[in-house]
Image (cartoon, rainbow, N blue to C red; front, top):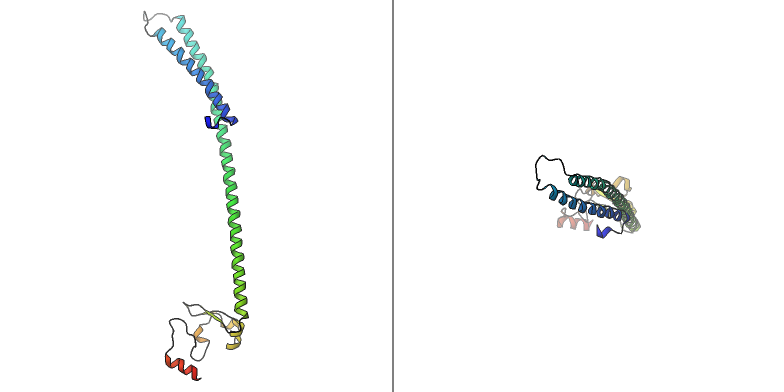
Length: 193
């Protein structure tokens, strides 16, 4: 408790504790006195000694004084715990909002960067003076063509995209896909034509 004694609720709880400690010490002394008084009864069955009755009344009075202190201590600690819980919940909610905001900000930056890269790619792809055809390596399907390739092949991008690359040309392919290499005779025939 000493580390938190500067906090108002904790100071109040410590005050309750210290007051109750004093009463508990008094209760212990009264208990010792009571034990000494009744520890060696002279004659069993005698009427209670007035000293014993006075000591028992003191025990009851001290007990009655401790109960409100214990209740106040419990209430103060409970209130402090609720406040700390609320503070921690607010801190957690604040951290969640900050992390979500940061995640959203980073996601938007990444999306902007991807869009910029895509725009640069499209500009380069469609402004090239050579015919460019982008083909999926695994399926061999045309993914994208530029305007120059459309003119060279004689079909629009809508007709070419999604078709197999090998179907675009009627003769041998000059630049085959990996794994579809041409024989030397095919390459020679292409050069003669």
